[in-house]
Length: 272
Image 1 (cartoon, rainbow, N blue to C red):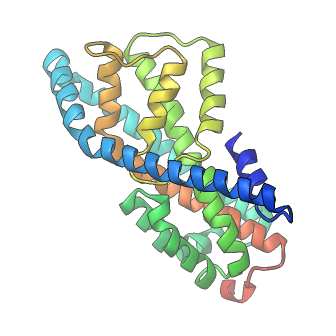
Image 2: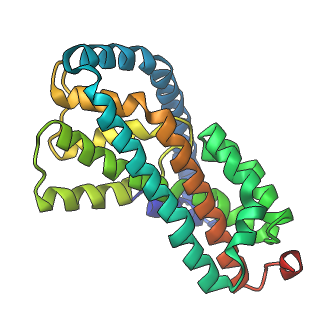
């Protein structure tokens, strides 16, 4: 819905009718201010969340012992297997199929942006370097890259979606709650749509995860197993966030190269 709302504002903002344009600009400024406010609130919450996570994990380890380490390790391994499959197989096939270029060369050329995404855990912070890499290393026209990469950083969050789905299933399994096929389908649909527009800042994933969990009845209440499992996910979110951000940024660059190639705006001399 927010996507179509934004498109409508973009179109009406350039209308010749002064009254409509003024009204749309007012709405635009309101949305812009609200977005900045929410980013500040989210940042503030995330700054203090480690204290709460520490307390939750301490209680969980006191109750369950070191056996929870095995469950955490399995979650990390599962997520990174998914990230690797997305990076190497899915993106590789799409890139090779639509551009007829070497995916190994793509990885070599795009590695700087990929590594920065891994280190910063922020698509937004990586965006300036991603734009530079796309233009200078991958040969993408600036006209294409300056449109698709910022757009992709907001709506193309494959790694984020995979993380959300696996984490919800992990919490449900840890709490001994059986999700019905309908609930699983709801999770997939909500995550697929909900991750579009997620803030491209480090640590924003758990905020969306909490909302998705509530939609399928996994309410995080003090002292419950669900709260303990959610705390485990929060405790390792830094590790999971690095992989999923790199996956997201790589997907943006792959999609940008495909669009540039289809429009004849990819400098093939850089690929020789």
